[in-house]
Image (cartoon, rainbow, N blue to C red; front, side, top):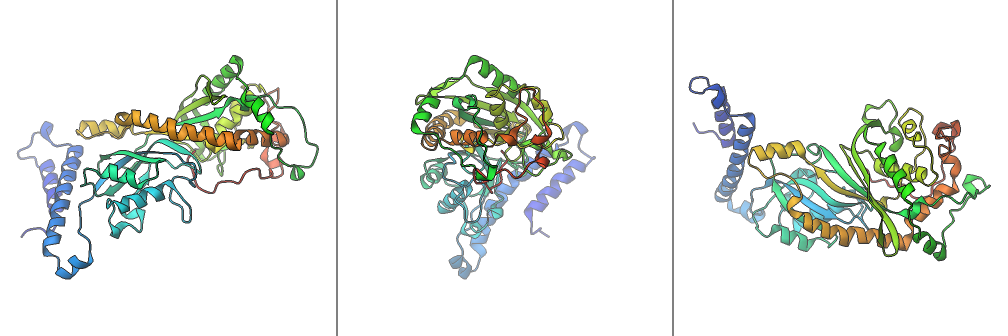
Length: 440
């Protein structure tokens, strides 16, 4: 009797061949990876055949009511976006997000059927990394099951998307692929003007913290600040400080809601570099690039924030080791405007894919397009927003307005009792805290 499920028949047959000892020599046994590859090929064929059979045998009334079923493939979409104007990457009810724009465009071009258009979970949607409000991505990967029969699907998709969101292509992936779980490391970049390293004025506001106002720089003051140029000594200090992050450390002070004893607070950083300074529209900028396995919410922004506070005051680098210890201190997170996801890395998955003659999930073939997009839509957006809103200056002004919350910034490089969170009143709110979750 013929089985009603040809995929089960194929799996049973493959397993029988693997287990059989009558005709197989050990060295010729198919590997589990090859079995998976064969099963996936059968899935593709069966999906197409099933769609055809359903179309032929379905009652006429169902054919009228339902759209034609087309086979879906599991793919990884490779994309870039400028996060300005968006409430983060991940779909959030009532918020304008990158995923919301992408999902709508996929539905509009027929890559996602109307039956699956009400819930991303129906197509197994997943992103390699979340990004917070206003944070950009030069390289981002999402996986989902979608209809890819149209050879012009990427061109049509981009026609439906805003110019600040681009999809470069897709890769057909193994059914087990998970863009978050298979991502074994990530590169992030942080771009900032060097005037943040100007030494503090030393002026102290004697008013109680709750009565202080955040002073804004005048246009004339901002002209002077943008003429600042970082010294070779400060640049060397910054690079040495970033090197202290390399390795495995406890970053409970660089995120929210984690204690020192929480094992997940330990993170591994593979590299952290600072570029040579570059003049953009009369203002000097530097780029920081960090490579790590995974990052917690606000971790990178707080790592950058600490280095800025230390470099502008020449605080001893010995302080950094103390921030990895049990004492809980308040480290301010640098502005989100400067952060971007450079690219996710899928090392082990790509090695296995190549062994199976499948395409790896990587941006190499699109790198020129990605770089052009990054310069036009991300770097230019960062510089434009900073020149109009003075985000970094306002952040620094906030630090200098409430110095008593950062008394670990001192000539001795020690953490006094006054710097411990348990001994401080609540820091007055300077900027609205983002509610959208983030891995940065």
